[in-house]
Length: 432
Image 1 (cartoon, rainbow, N blue to C red):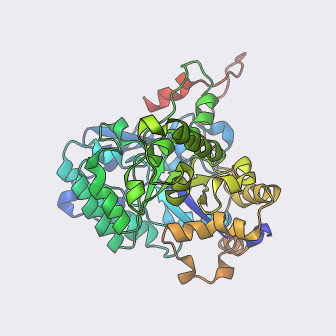
Image 2 (image 1 turned 30 degrees about the vertical axis):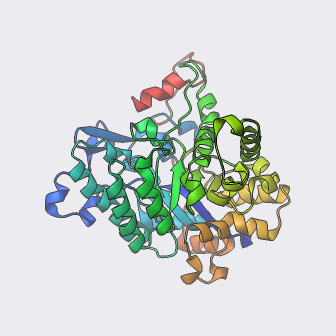
Image 3 (image 1 turned 90 degrees about the vertical axis):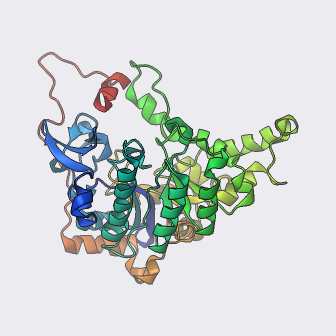
C-alpha cells in the first residue's frame, strides 16, 4: 500500500480547551462558578474554585522545535492555534493526513479528575455535563465525521456516571475516559462492586472505556537526579500494570465490555499475555482466579484494545499482539507526536514489518471504526479520506507547517556555561 492511499484514524489526540468554551453551553448563573481563564505572570491559567491549572509546555508543543520542549508553562499565544481552535485543528489534521481524531481534554485532566477534586459536587456535575456538551456539540459537532467524541464521567458518584453515559450515548457519544486505576485517586478499585452499575451501563450502551496513561499508575521518577528520559521511556509501559489488573476484572467474564489502553504502545503485549497464561496455569490452583475456561490471553483479545504512536517491534509481531485489537494514534499536540509527518513514520514501519494491505487498513482505521462506533464514510467518500486527498486539501487551505519559535522559550546559556542533562528534579518543578 502506498502512503498516500492509507486512511488514518487517531484514537489518541488532545485539545487545549479554548477560554470561551463554557460561555457556549452554560447559563449566566452557572457560568459564575464555572472554570475560567485568567492571565497571570504571562501565563494563561484555568481557575476552578480554589485550584489553578496551567498548560505545561510538553502538553502542547506541536510545531515547536524540540529544543523548546519542557521549559516553560505556556499561554495560548505560545501554542499552534490548532491546539485549541477546532477550525485550525481540522487544517492541521489535513496537513498530517489524519481523517478522524479522538481528543482528550487538558485542564480538567484526561480523566476529568479536575472535576472530581472540586469541593462542590453539585457545581462539578453541572460543569462536567457542560464540558461534555461543548465537546460533543461544539468541538466534534463542528465537523461531523472528523472526530470521535469522548465523554468525562462524574467519578465521585456511580449512579450519576450511569445517567451521564446514557445521556451522552443518546447524543451519539460511545466513548468515555476513565482512570486506569481509580484507587490511586482515593476511589474504589475496579474490582469493587461499587462500579457494577457502570459496567452494566457501558455494556448496554456499547461504550468504549478509554484508560489513558498517566491517569492512575504513573511510573515513579527513580530519583531527582535521574535524567528525565528515564521517566519518559517508562511512562507508556506503566499501563502494563493496568492491563494485568483489568484482565482480571470479573465483569470482563460476564459482560461484553471493551476498554482501550491509550498511549501505551503494543510491543510489550505479547510478553504480558504469555506471562498471564503461564501465571494462571502455574498458580491458578491456589489463587482461585478463573477466566471462565478461557486463557487470559483470549480474554485480553476479546475485551482489550491497545494503541501505538510509533512501535515497529509491535507491528513486526502483530500476530502475537492481535491485528483486530490495535489502534493507531497521532498524539497531537503532545511531545511524542511526529506531526506533520505521521504518515511517513507509520508507512515506513508497516512496510518494514511486512504488513498486508488488510492489516494496514485494520490498524489505521477499520478497527477504530468498528470498536468506537465511528462511521466517517457516512459523511465522506472513501477516496476523499486518504492521506493524499487530505494533504491536497491542506495545500488548498494554505496550511503552514513551518516550526513555531517562541522568544525566551529556549533559555540561552550564560558565558562559559555548558549544557547539562535535564533531570527529573528540573521537570518536577514545572508541575509544582
